[in-house]
Amino acid sequence: MAGICALKCPCFRSPSSPSFSFNLLRSISYRARLSRIYAFSSNDIKVGSNIEVEGTPWRVIEFLHVKPGKGAAYVRTTLRNYLTGNQVDKTFRAGSKIEEADIFKETKQYTYKDSSQYVFMDLSSFEEFRLNEKDVGDKSKWLKEGMDCNLLFWKGKVIDFELPITVKLTVVEVDPGVKGDTAQGGSKPATVDTGAVVTVPLFIERGQEIMVDTRTGQYMSRA
Image: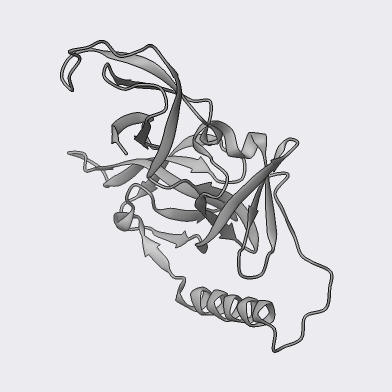
């Protein structure tokens, strides 16, 4: 992804400092992961698999194993390019070897927005990672300061991030509930403190906290 960078404090850190130890452990962990990367079969493909095609990391969005009456079996996939966000359809011969992308996750805290960039911080080393608005996309409507997210790294670069599956948000604007409204029945739109609009049951009122599924944007329950 363009525009993603990491900032490190320029001050010297001795080998005994916590930051130095953290970065050393992360480097060792990264080399250990490299040794485990292997070429797996297209038969192992599933939704969420990370593969490398022509030197680029892709995530499997959809897949279908096809075994025609005549001819060789194959796997039809829809892939999303981690670097550009583009989606393509690609077919692999059944049993063919595919390189698995060496993508790993690290938890960082979203701290604040600086102009058009979202700033995440490693609370151990205080290293900052910045993502541009276009890289964050629609996920921004669920981001709150102080939220822990998973940053995805590939070859030392941040290529994506993951929100928590569920988040607690506060309703800041909604039509008032009507006496007698229950959990069953109609629904209404509510604006939460991140600016997102969520469809909620009629009994939800302003100031209440609700749980929302960030994958679907759906109301789950009162917090």
